[in-house]
Image 1 (spheres, helix red, strand yellow):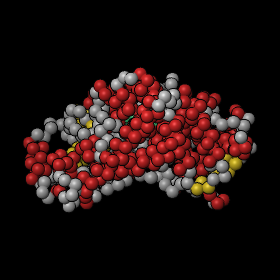
Image 2 (image 1 turned 180 degrees about the vertical axis):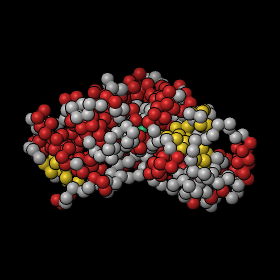
Image 3 (image 1 turned 90 degrees about the vertical axis):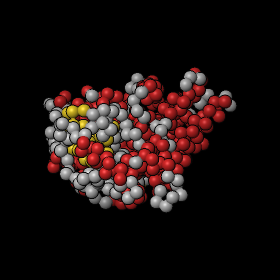
Image 4 (image 1 turned 90 degrees about the horizontal axis):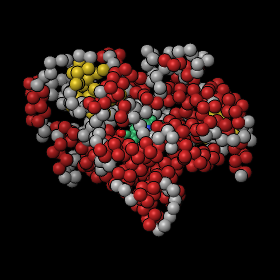
Length: 501
Ligand code: HEM
């Protein structure tokens, strides 16, 4: 644990003692789920990993099973390691398992309270999800195909003969799509790059905070400690983050509003709502979270696919052969082509299964205590869903560590209908499932398949293809390849043709 997070433990020691005594006196009649034994008062603080949570949770599955309990100084953590339990809790008992953590650090000190991903269920959460459904639901997402294709073409041109880390080019393409559909082309042109970078920095800090333990969550009155007090690092982090999160929330909306007042008719979701003049606070929150939650995740899923291609040249060749046969090799691919490209579709799904872009989902919180399979789940427990393990669970997928698009094809796998829907795992569960999933998949598919239509994706400098068993990814809430570099080698006249026109 980071030292700045435990600074106040000495002054506050009396409180955990009282809490521990209280918890002994209110011991539930059913047992907690199994987990590491821990110590009085501090619970499992010493067992808990400083980072690499997903790996540690996966190791605990071997020792304790599919549902694991740890106690971090009175804060209960429940770790779910099986798809069945995740579905039982998050889908079938959604009323209990759909809250988010009441994070003082994130919501109050860092100013992320406007983010629907952190809101508790209720009228505002439902209203924001409705805006998502209307604009980014499966029937409406194809409306953005022209925008996605414009950015796809730009991405393909940018990566012509490129060698190195494609992150910048991909994040720029994703950011442009999401900012343009949210705030309009003119806002994207003027501020897109800066906004994407700001968002990236703000999220890095938010994720760093979310995957650490903060004493202020256990002792809420600590939030009143002034930032100048020695050791109050959490307050200074909060102030820095608040500046960024508030700018993400207000700045692009104000830019769009300014343009609207000047008579601009730049089509975008913000403008639609301004024209209607209805409850604008809700729309403002919805649009801000579209790029807040959508850019880094969609970038991760796109890069993960490109990485999988570099490591699996045979699968890459098969996709390219399918694309060439379908298009004649002379055009880019869009999300609309997906149903005509069964092998490409299978490889796309397989890449999401092979490496989950959000390996631990977004943590939930219980709204009341519950009993599952004879085990006691306390109220206000943080629920971590080990999605990456579910997607590589040998009980569900044969040879789960192998990248094998064929597992998704009926011609190769007669039991394909028994496989779970990848969207309903990698993008979360129940009423909080990712509302941006249709856009993420449609844009990611167009980007990656168009790149494969134009280029071979190979290691840089003519190096041999690394062994896929050595693949490494960033261990974060959203996860992309670590130190990924590749070369985009033209394989047809497509890229040159695009560049000429
Ligand atoms: C491949 C890309 C993406 C992945 C893997 C992903 C994954 C997820 C996951 C796992 C959750 C948590 C769901 C749960 O609690 O069960 C989530 C929530 C969310 N995602 Fe995504 N996401 C992606 C792209 C997007 C995009 C493009 C948008 C917006 C345009 C978006 C907006 C959101 C929002 C607003 C939430 C919070 C929903 C709520 O709490 O009610 N995501 N996403």
